[in-house]
Image (cartoon, rainbow, N blue to C red; front, side, top):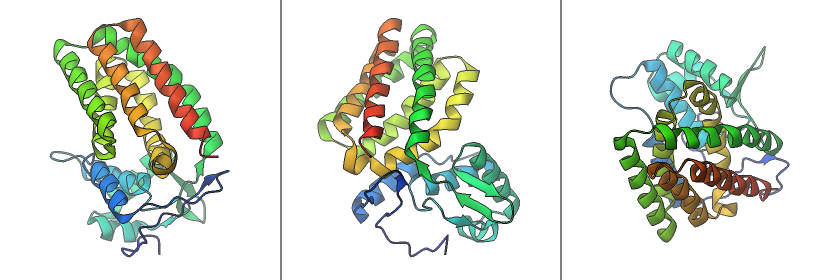
Amino acid sequence: MADSSKRSSTVRARAAGSRRPVRQSSAAAGKARAAAQALVPQGDVTLTDRAYAELEELIVTLQLPPGTALSELVLAKRLDIGRTPIREALQRLSRDGLVNILARRGVLVSEIDLRAQLRLLEVRRELERLMARGAAERATAEQRKQFSEIAAGMRRASEKSDDLLFMRLDHQFNTLISAASRNEFASRAMGLMHGLSRRFWYQHYKEAADLPLAARLHADVAEAVAERRVDAAGAASDSLIDYIESFARSTL
């Protein structure tokens, strides 16, 4: 059943075109879920916001694998949230490309498609360069301090190959650069891609990612922004996307 609490810790979801199943130890899966759970909003948020964040976390961390049929009733019971917020959250997830709402078939978790991921990266490259340069120009003193702290944390994650620290800092980095760039249109567009990007990373990072390199490349962007080096921030962003694209292609 789609929402069974006894789902195996072995994840067998496949990306389109991939020939290799993804297997994660229960410890690794638990660490990644803990990182993702830390991203679920706390405090004064609406039930729809909470439902959206928790469902996104379940989908991104493959606890609801691609192709899973979703029931509003079952999800409402699982999350202890009413069906109306669940329905509204599913509409938002459909907008993000994480679920498909099909006439007479209900709601299905979308498949992971490598070709779609590569097209997404074409757009991410332009947006992330724009946002990195914008943040380097417009970040406040407090935001620059935070970028410096993220850069230092990413260096530690690189040295220790700490995936939990990396995922937490990556979320902080994305949130901060969106705010510091002062471009609401770029931020909205990037918001539509975060879930798909995180899910693709989560599915493949254990088998294909060079986490120390990924962390260093994030640190390079954060440092350039912190130091108000606009051109360097744009170049560092391109280098990061170069790596992410090579990572995606390596999953074939």
